[in-house]
Each structure stands twice: as C-alpha cells, then as structure tokens.
Length: 242
Ligand SMILES: Nc1ncnc2c1ncn2[C@@H]1O[C@H](COP(=O)(O)OP(=O)(O)OP(=O)(O)O)[C@@H](O)[C@H]1O
Ligand SMILES: [Mg+2]
Image (cartoon, rainbow, N blue to C red):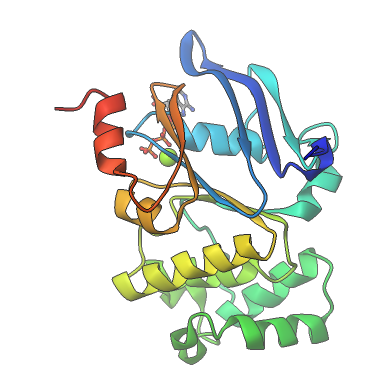
C-alpha cells in the first residue's frame, strides 16, 4: 500500500539539537503512525522533552525538519496547529480559572462555539466522572492528577488528529492510568495518532503499539510492542543496564 506523505501524522527527519557545544539530539529520524500509540522512552536527560518541544515548535532544531501530516511544523505552523494538541509535562493551566472556564477557554481557542463546547464537555467528562464534582472549582485548588485529567479532556475537545503528550501519567492514580491508557488506545483505534514520552514501562507494555528507545540523544531501537515483548529486558539491554 502506498502511504502519501500527507497521511503520516508525524515525520521527523534528521533532527539534531545542540545547546552551545553540547549535542542533545543526534540525527533523529522517526515516524509516528496513524492508528497507533507511539512512545519514546529513555533515561532522564536522554532528550525526550527536547524532541517533543521541537516537534511542537517551542524549540528550534539545530538542523533537520519535522512534518505533521506532510506540513512543515515551522513554515506551515498555522495549519499544523489545527491537527495537533500538545500536553506538556508540567500541565500548566490558568490557576484563577475554574476547570470549566478553562475548558471553554481552550475550546474557544480551538474554534468551537459555547454550545459545541458544552456538549463536548458533557460527554468527555464521562472519561473521568470524578471530575464532575470539582469542575467549577478554581484550578489553583486542583491536585496534580485533576489538572492532568482536565487538560486531557481539553485535548479532545476539537478532535485533533495527533496528540503529543510529555509524561502523561506521572500524577495519575492506578485506576486513572488504566482509564487514560484505554482512552489513548480508543483515540488511536478511531484513526488518531499519539506520540508520548513515558518512564513507566508497564504502561508502555499495556497501551503502546510502537516504542522508540532514546539514549543520550540517539535512537537506540525502534520496536513494535507485542503481547510477548519484554520491554524491561529490551530497555536494559539496549542501554546496557546490569
Ligand atoms: N535550556 C537548556 N540548556 C542546556 N541544556 C539543556 C537545556 N534543556 C535541556 N538541556 C539538556 O538536554 C538534555 C536533554 O534534556 P531533556 O529535558 O530533553 O531530557 P528528557 O529525556 O526529557 O529527560 P527526563 O526524563 O528527565 O524528562 C539534558 O542533558 C539536559 O540537561
Ligand atoms: Mg522530559
């Protein structure tokens, strides 16, 4: 089957990043596929957040290009923004807004009207029904996990085609991790694509379809995650961890 360039959610071509003389990413080329939950894993400082920030245009690569559905992430930034939603590792929200106000604010930025946002919120809050009781509270009073749930709800408001999430499950409780993982799978099965970073190998084993291990700024291995994949073994082997 011939896949057109415009059908590839994320294509990273030979991306390098240096801070002064320090090489942080070296010649990274990879593809995140449609219908899949794609993940990068790797030790602290491997370059995961740097790569994600380059993908979403918050950082400039020293060299190399990134394409989102065939469009260059910098030169065609306006078009690219419509297709993706990025959740950073610090889930920053406007503290003085209530959760509900933040949802309306985000929906509005994504071009939805109040009626559309209201309908979406009613349905999306069912992912995390426990959010119903604090959705009108100020975000300043939210726990880390509640913030993550709120931002995830926001991410799905405008039906993006590509979700980019830096360490999504750090603050979530075990039940919420399962709910979240299943939602990502559902999102991918409906034709979306996810590109995330995580340290939690058990999460990757259960919910990720394709994994890329990054070590010291280089891709060490790319692999499909199957039922019998021993991710922990693979991780330790490629990183030479005893
Ligand atoms: N602004 C900066 N200036 C200089 N070096 C930086 C800067 N930001 C990040 N780095 C370095 O780049 C490397 C990659 O950092 P990055 O945050 O991308 O790693 P990571 O894989 O996301 O790590 P973690 O698992 O801890 O989140 C690290 O060595 C880090 O110290
Ligand atoms: Mg990081």
